[in-house]
Length: 600
Image (cartoon, rainbow, N blue to C red; front, side):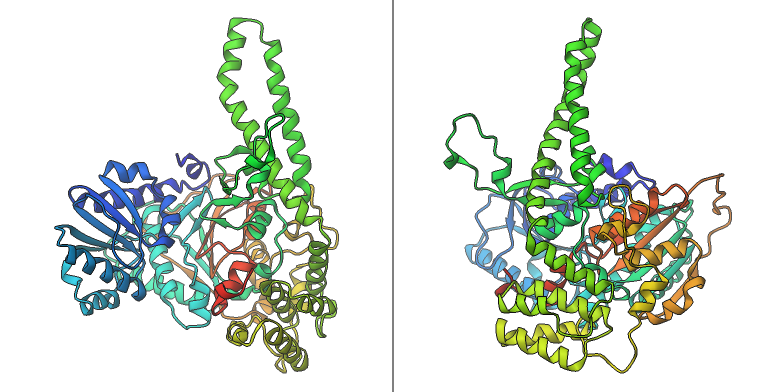
């Protein structure tokens, strides 16, 4: 089921198996039939760990979504609440339990906090008078969830907001704890590098936790050579830009959630000859996207302009394979053809799906609106007229385009100019509030606090220096056969990934001046390895670095890191971890106050 997790340099399936084992053990604590009441946000991440079949094996008969009022009827002995430690959820649980008590059903209640127990939440349950109703109160440590053979995510959507707006370091504690758990399975990571305030906090917490466990030395040969901790606010520009890889565009346009995407159904309908179109499906087409699908693994990290030719090449290979049946003469040859048939049919259906998705995306990327938006982004990234009001943004506001589109562009202009001139800043602010409503003053305030949209202070704009020194813009990026990471944004090399690349070779000492211009400290730490666990590297063996993005990472950055792993002379393989997989839209949305009222 999860074979694709063990194909890479690091077998991430070990992590998934540990999570499954812990889940089984908890379910077995609650003897008898069970119903699980889910905090809705957890169902996606749990789906990556365990399918319904595993729950069923452990007597889970019903599953409900946590909502206020009475629980739906279920003839089970145990009711288990799977929830995040949030106070508002405790009130709903209390309501559920009290309504059950009124019905006088003799059921056992259990609560499983994910990822940590919370004294505050237990206190709230006590105030509501239901704490004593729970037989088991436990925590389920779901920190790093394996998404793919080289990708881990905590799916902690509020991490950036908590760190930069609310000064809440809970997510950093969970990150440090997650890294400790990871090292318990994969060995101590000898070298740690970091950039940014949050990175410094995580490293300090992790090293402190390590000292507290000093008695229990980890005797596992280290799998990772290096850990790189990067704050999202070191590179605020990259998530604002439109991703131009295949996977990045799927996420930008349709949104990938927990490895699944929902697509408009009409492109996937199997229309039969002469059939009326009124019977077309209305339900979204839901597809799982990961490297278990051969074709997807091949094309997901390509620039979208290179996807068409890759698909037509694949189509020729598949049709040639099917033609092979005419050449099968002997029984042995026919048998061999038949044995390959399931694989060939799966490849054909995969090709049909991705051809449909590529057509859907092409309709958007060839539109004038997409081109105009991209042109303005690229002007900002190359430093063209970032210090005055942009006429395209003015027009978009006048046409009342979606607010998030406006905010992404305005923030991008601000980041590329190290803040906007006061009169430009005031003008944008006034236009946005008058057009979209004054309630958005809170959102603008949040963006300012996060340094995404701010008035210029007296300090000079360092972005041009950073751009030139780190070669963040390459004029003629080769999209078909890339030779640099800048292909993922058709010219712009993500700053976060460029920092990672320079760290590997020639090292951060060569860019000391640029590092000082970026926010937060940069540092290096070493963790002592027990005697006998020092790796003896074979000739030509690659080193392995775990790059941890604190505050979120985009699919285009992941593609750029995969590109570096595949470069023949890089000598480095990258595993990516993050607090959340994001894109510019979901990121800005997480910083908005009352986003649901306004975002179409």
